[in-house]
Length: 128
Image (cartoon, rainbow, N blue to C red; front, side, top):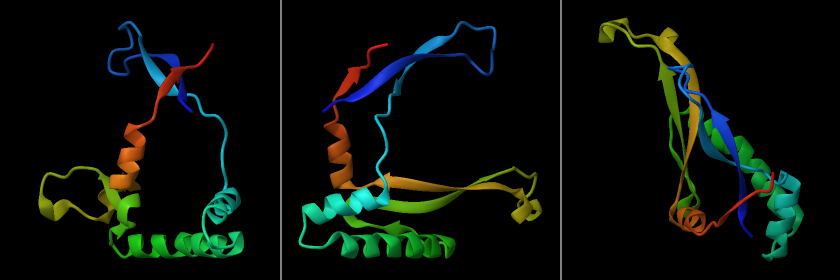
């Protein structure tokens, strides 16, 4: 199955007078929730969907705790999660405080198996 994309025009925010350029954008085909994921995993494993759901729910509690402790959470070939910060600059190192932090951002970096799967994605232009 191919990932469908659409073509969208986007203006240059730095130069609004510049002509718009066209870019590809993924056309999503729906959503899948945690319960559906647990059912799919149960179907390809020896675990019940209830057991899978329990593990996924535990991950939802544990991963944010470790991220908040400043740890990188590595999930093997799946990938890792880490916290990064967006902050305002200061003239000196001593002037930097927690107030400089504008927003925390959670970053996901895919592991080997995940990257390999992403390289094999095919793309198809969606009908407009």
